[in-house]
Amino acid sequence: YKFLDSYNGYRVIEKDNDIYLKKLDGSESKKVTHTPDIPTSYATITKDGSYLAYDENHGAAWDYSKSEYFLIKRGEDNSNRKKISFDEFRQINIARKRYKE
Image (tube, rainbow, N blue to C red; front, side, top):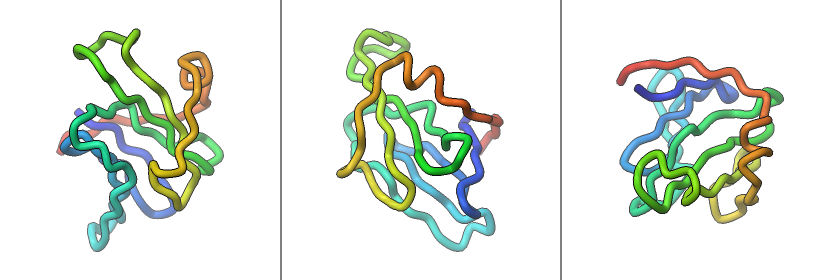
């Protein structure tokens, strides 16, 4: 399962340890992260649409002690990301839906 979020006509896709924004009509895809060796997960758009929030896991799957959490401002990539705490990540008011790809 992957998470689906709307982002100005795009949906968020996690693929090959990176995050992409893909146009809903499938005509365009933008790579947002460049971390092929670091698993990313829980990519989602903040409720106000201004940021993409996600988790990078530097350990075994589900070992949250090795996770780091980030925000990326709309229209930017992870070169300008902001590190946030787990509590900030958890409190971001988001709406997620699951989809299969």
